[in-house]
Each structure stands twice: as C-alpha cells, then as structure tokens.
Image 1 (spheres, one colour):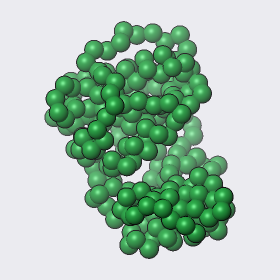
Image 2 (cartoon, one colour):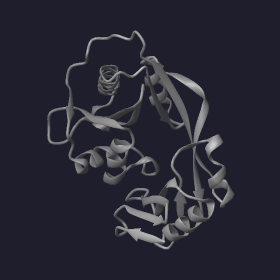
Image 3 (cartoon, one colour):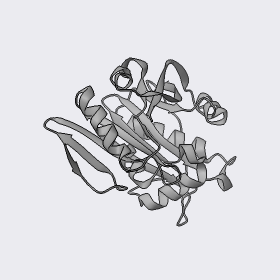
Length: 233
C-alpha cells in the first residue's frame, strides 16, 4: 500500500488498481474521512486502519445510498449520520436571475471561515472539503453574495450529465433572515439551467428544519431515498 501526501493534509492511498482518499473531518473534531474510488473490501479495511493510525477517534464514509453501503458494512462500518435527499425539476423552469450574487474563483480559506461560522462543529467542512465539493462533478462553480472581504454566504453547485447538485450552501449567522440563502439557491438553479440540467438534487440533515423549509419553498421535494454516513471506530 502506498500513501501520497502528509496528514493532516489530504492523502491518497493506493494498492495496484485500488485507490482511496482521506482527510480530517474538520479542524474541530478528531475524526477522519475516507472515500473509496475503487478497491476490494480488504483494501477498504486496510485504508481505514491506516487512517486510524493518525490518531482519529473514528473514520467516516462519504454519504452513501442504502444500496451502496454493503461493502462498508462488511468491514465493520456502522450508521453514523442520516441525510434527507431533495430534488427539483428544472424542465420549463424560469425565474428572474437574483441580484447581488456573483460567480467567482474562490479563496477557499475565506469560504472555510464562512462555513465555520455557519454550522455546528459536527457539520463544518474544511478548505480541503470545500475543494472536494467543487471537484465532485464534471463541471462546477462557486456563487457568493456580498461584496466585502468575507462573503455573506456562498453556494457550491455542479453538474454531471443532466443532473445538477447543490453541494454546499452556507450563510453566516449575521446575514440570515435577509433572503441571502434564497438568492443563492435561485442563482444555483439559473446556473444549472444554463448548463443544460434537467433537475437539481441536494441533501440536508433531518434536524435542519429551517433549511428543509427553504428548499421546499424553492420547489424542492423530498425523495424517499436517504443518504447515510457510516462510521468505523
């Protein structure tokens, strides 16, 4: 097994054709995050144990559908977090483009600071995590609202094929209740339509009722499927 990179920076773990990536969950909690690109159950277990060797208390999987969790469960992963899935059709959708939202090439350190202010420790991301969200689809962008050095809020949106994904959205607490989140969602929908998407999908924790209400008001409907993050350790 070969490891490229130095923890706590993101690392890549390979063995012949098998490949996985890992990084800290965030800077507040002593958790690791492991994503499996390809490989057997044996490789997954070895990669997991390697991440454990950095002293993390648990190793978390990416969000997976129930039908995709079996390989993780076979090596000892157990349920950790649930996420609800929402979808909105974009066929025939039109709406005025919201003002005050820009598409930028971001400074991820700045985005990570907005993210830190916007979420409780368990749900905070990192600079590396936000970069990964941007790269998770074949095409993606970052939208921000606000003109100061620190954005009021941001959204990471991407598309693969005819489906777009709202990967991350955050609004700092001092700017909530002023329509920033709604503007970012509508700007993301506009971006998706411009790039040929027929629908947009997102996820949110069941406990985040405010976000769920915002998504429903923007035309999203909850899907029967769920995503689960699994944990080892």
